[in-house]
Length: 488
Image (cartoon, rainbow, N blue to C red; front, top):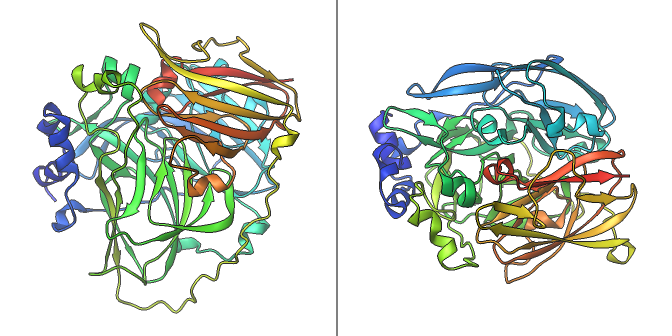
């Protein structure tokens, strides 16, 4: 596929100078032209070293796009960590990128000096990590966490899967090996010369976050992957800075949601679409032997609505020159090309109960906290009226306590809220959407739409110390939408 054809279907190049509606129409191109998906999907290798080296590299992507990139161990995305519950994980983070950085193990329950707090950044040299995997199987991930520059470091390539297994999950005999597909979905901006660039405008930093017009899956633009007509497990990670995806198949075919941020759901949930905000993960089962025609299954981000909660404020990004498709637009992600050869494996026979989970009871909560998410003129986004300060304690909780937190979004834009070193259960969401399929299980990141109030319950069992919670729209986080949580 030549560059001109690719830009035509992904709304890049000169399209970034057009109105958002024009760009969106480019991204809405269907799969009638096979050139939409011209590059084979790739998968990072499994980490086989006791070192994660972050380094700079001038990368060529899909033979024609360039990126002034950052890589872990020379890989884009970073190498996959695969480990079993109860094992000891140890690795040396080597920082050779020429600026401050530190690694956060997103979703993992670790001691404070292992969590990647921004106060622990290093400018060069190494930082040792060592901790025991003491949580259930799940699709977790790792990425940098320096204050004010997390967004550009993740955007330029520093992120990877951290996959934990355990006996409970292995007993289900889920698709594995070639039939388990870890997919990190990210959006990027590309200029007329084919350069992937990061240069957020003021409205992008203050309002929308950085929304690109190109979709990359595992670092490959709008790829295809050849599959057999049988069940597959897709481990989905939204690794974008700000964009929310509504995962669906273009033909409306259903899939089975089996896992969320914190591992297996209590029961499998059938769905034909699934919202996934930055930082969130979902495990789904897809049977490519059923419901797809023309030997093709096209994965898209389906259109969805974002509540305005502010009238003119909601359109400010366009008025101030924001480029790129609006949040909630529909566009293609990737294609699965289904082979004709029948597979001899038996269908997946899922039990009604996937996992035995004991969620905290509301009546056992020692406290309920209100976490106000606001947009303040001349300051930007705040948490309870404050922006981040490195060592100020914003919320203090007692180790072992169970609490309910209510996130209240008074702003005009979505906020995916992430709490470090805990997994929580979503109790309720105001409005008509109700809980998402993934919200029937453990979560560490929750999407709070404009005007919504979302209640979550959690027990603070992590080691005592200082951690953070923040918006996982990385431009919001870098601008100070983060707070310190101290477990005492």
